[in-house]
Amino acid sequence: MPGTRNVATIGAVQSTVSVLLSPARLSAHGIALDELRRALQAHSQVVHAGAIVADDRAIAVQAGDYLARPEELGDLVVGMHAGRPVYLQAVADIEYGAPESTHYVSYAQAGGGIAPAVTLEVAKKPGENAVEIADAVLERVAQLQGVLIPAGVDVHVTRNYGATANEKANKLIQKLVFASLSVIVLVALTMGRREAFVVGAAVVLTLAATLF
Image (cartoon, rainbow, N blue to C red; front, side):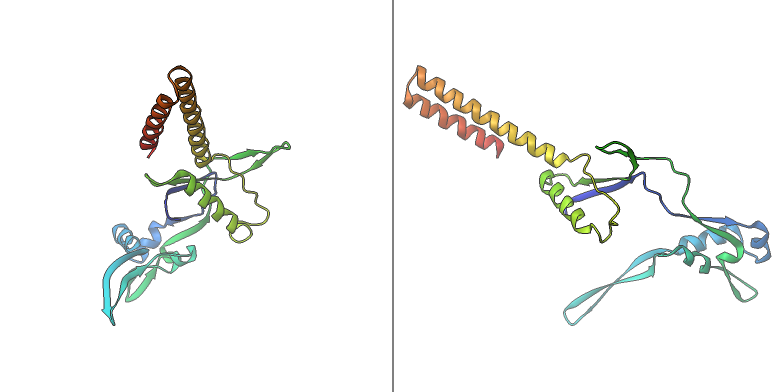
C-alpha cells in the first residue's frame, strides 16, 4: 500500500526448505562443494536486462526467475557428470517444514481464555500522515476478510498509532481554543472589547501559523 514501509510478523510459522548434502553422493557425481554453492546462488535470482523500445512503448526485460515452490529445488541442475545433468535431489536430501519457533504470540480474549495469534506490524514512511495510513490499512484488512484471511480468523487491532495521534491532535486543538478564549475574555473584562479583539486576532493568527 502507498505510504507504508516495513511490514513484519511475530509468531507466524515460516515455511523453510532444508538442503542436506551427502558427501558420498557428491563425490560419486563429481560435484565439488564450491561448484554446488555457485550453482545454487545462480538460481532464484532476477536480473534486469534493459528494455525493449518499440511503437512508442518501453517494455522492461528481466532475465531469470524466482523459485516459487519448494519442489522446484529438487529439479535444479547443479552440475554435469558423464555428459548428463546432475540434479540437486541426486546429491542431497530436501526436507520441507517449519523451523523451531522462537516467538509465540497469544491473545487474551475479552470473555476469558487465551487464543494463539499472529501479530502483524505495519509501519508508515517518514512524512506520511499516520491517521490516513492507519485508516487505509484497516480498510484494506476489512476487504481481505474472507478472501485472503480465512473466515475462522478474527482480526483485532491491538495498537493504532494513527488513532492515538489523532486523539492527541484533537486534544491539543481543544486546549488551544480554550486557552485563546480565556485570554480574550480576560482582556475584554480588564481592558475593553477593542483590546480583546486585537489580542484575540494576534493569538489566533499566531497559533494558526504555528500549526500550519
